[in-house]
Image 1 (spheres, rainbow, N blue to C red):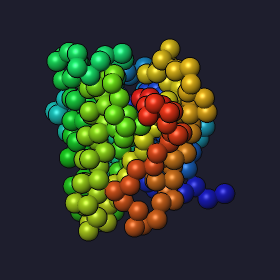
Image 2: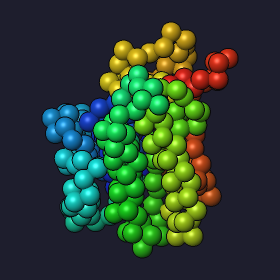
Image 3: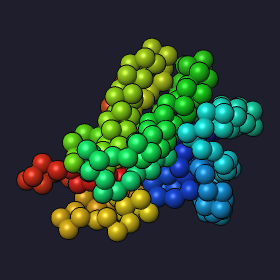
Length: 249
């Protein structure tokens, strides 16, 4: 059996749990060497151990995506150690549940913008130059169903994901001539710590597992046609009759 990502270096943000963990394991399972980044070192090291136990290659770096100096330094360390980054997965995100859009506290708005949107930008900003220089690379940004359909709650989160989608499509157009593909995934309700206890009564089959999202990420990293860029794969079911999306990832 051929491993599709042998000799590829992947950087995954928010890799210590949930979707990030699942994507990191999936990429490593296809032969990629994975740089695991996040704020919680014990979780990152646990995922690193899982990958290594399965015969894969991984290393971990503590990195807060909202901290520009930390992002720049970490990416420089990864490039110094491994020489390149072929695949970037911007997954790190937070959410404040049950906050009406009109009543969003400024502190929540600022924190989610810093991590979910600015963090995605910072990682792209420091990774993309070497992709452009090599005329090769794949960027996968994690959006959300909340970034496609307006919701009346979790306003900061929804705004960041609308922003991620807009930034992704614009970035794809900007680097297409340089051979870099930029695409994204829009999960709905996913069974992670972020949505723990938040499952709606009508979630039904839209309640997916992180591994489902990881399979879609693997498609973008290893199987997507060369001319597929600026696209998002929606990973949530049909809306209910009220027009509400299944919910945030």
